[in-house]
Amino acid sequence: MIDQGTHPSQSPPVKHLSELISGLPGAAPALVEDPLVSGIAFDSRQIQPGSLFVALAGGTTDGHRYIPDALRRGA
Image: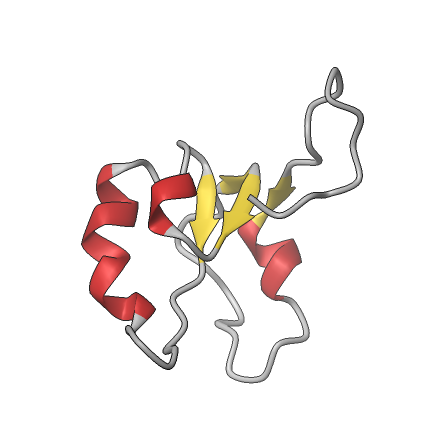
């Protein structure tokens, strides 16, 4: 998970997906659902329910291969 600057006893900020993607090129203008996102991870093994998984193509592996795992973990 990305460190969001919270103290360990505090909950991380929770935002709607629409808030996180607003202003991004190609972002969907309106979502059928607007889920709450409690964390962001680039590693599918760090996904917890409510997390947003960001799949990136890397030098040794392509994060898109791990989308099914991220979904099973609650992304």
